[in-house]
Image (cartoon, rainbow, N blue to C red; front, side, top):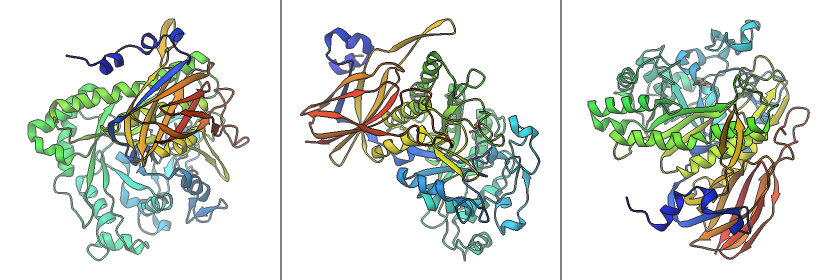
Length: 538
Ligand code: AHR
């Protein structure tokens, strides 16, 4: 292998390449404006809404008769809060729930819909709650039409996960028919129209099972490849609605699952790669059984950030394995579950399974992860944070008429400006953070980020993982110069800072001073912060 100077430098650890003594700044960022990676799809900023805990009932859905302000049953505060971040794509109804869900239960007159045991009915704190709890036994008030209404209200594309474990393929075809058939073309189209939705929903994205290696059927990859083919062969198509199928991919990058599935597809017929739009990778970092969402040490914070940063390697590894057989990379990656998973927090309502109160630490995880997706804009076609409200890496806390946005919400809002921009290569250099954990010396990246260009404007986002040290940072623009620059920062004096119902504005973004001087910018990036820097390019 021959290396040019730039790729040689990229192989040197940041601490060696940029000795502190040789620089006036603590950190350096080089942005290569003429080295495009790919367009950052808006869909990389998607969310996930599962019928789990407090996500749907008491989260998205309060019901039309609720005292809580709502739009036909959908929580108005949530719709209003989504407007500034402009949602892009929402995955529903699960997760593990999807492979137990019969979509027929959630259509037709609401009053006559059945109540069914939820997949999660006996998990964790739900176990001891009354049977009337909607997250234990689903009243099916929120079904396909209600989900579609929610998508319309927040301007998102729908992405529906179909049941591959517990229902036959026929029910999948019929769900597509219900959603996409013209009203006068079929009985199911007519049923949809009778609920007021005369125009087809035109749902393009369909997940074919979920975690089929686990809750979605405990299959081998070879078994799943057969089921995937069977479910997606001869699916009904409707006018102006191309279908894009997402296959159930690996748990945290499990190389075997990806290799076996792709080999089985290639062995049958490599043309079948044209039928797979996305390969769903799931990865959660978190502190389950190892810590607490609100109380944690600096070392525990670094350990979590290190595990969040694994996403980079998982994306590369999974992509490379896909390419062993899908040589032209027809199939793209879809990270349709990611997030920062903590133990249930007792401050959260007991029926909000997997609910905790996110802190600034979780905002750093969100920034690290979204930046990773941007850097791999050529590989990743969609991503969905788990989950939108009251669950895992939530953007919102909601309970009755109380509502708050989390620090993670603000990261999505700040990062919005990357959408549909051209991701360009950027090199972030700062000494790694060393710390001791469980008797071992560990390192976590100190400064990471991504850069994109759209309409003559550079957007650069970055995360400073250091809990203690701000970083004086010089940003060199290679292949352009900056006329004017400005910034925004999300930080707090304490990494444990969070928003809750009592104090909903403890953490929110503020302005950040950026100095522009031709080909370079200078900025001080506070400790434990997420920053956005924008510059008009000359
Ligand atoms: O997001 C919560 C659960 O985590 C999902 O239902 C499942 O797919 C994953 O294991």
